[in-house]
Image 1 (tube, rainbow, N blue to C red):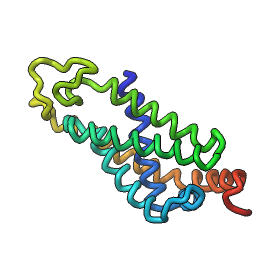
Image 2: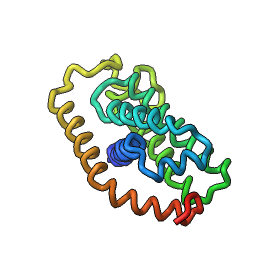
Image 3: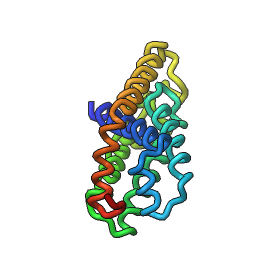
Length: 178
């Protein structure tokens, strides 16, 4: 249960974050400028987040999952380091830190069929070779795709409300005037 809870949190954040980056809401543009990143970094990050969300939620694909988990660790721990080096308050780097912890927890708690063979954190079943299990049914793929679609729809539908809140936050932080 803890695996699915932490996985849901990170996949939802990856979906929402990719929407924010690819649509380039004001909050993201202001943050990129504040942290000294080039404008196009948001687009690169958005596509990486989309790919990571799909890899993590899909059944099987253990090697792809390892890369995705490594990527989200670099993404969110890098966000924490960037905000700390800019002297930002806890409210700006606390969320990426929480997502980093959730990502580590999701990775550590993942079931045997989502691990590479030889991962020593928790022994995989003896009969598994790390590839897609023969028992992976189309329903598992349908559930993964359906969940991603729902998360992206929610991200797009809530974007206007979130954008207003984040604009106010940027003003309070002194990153923009208004």
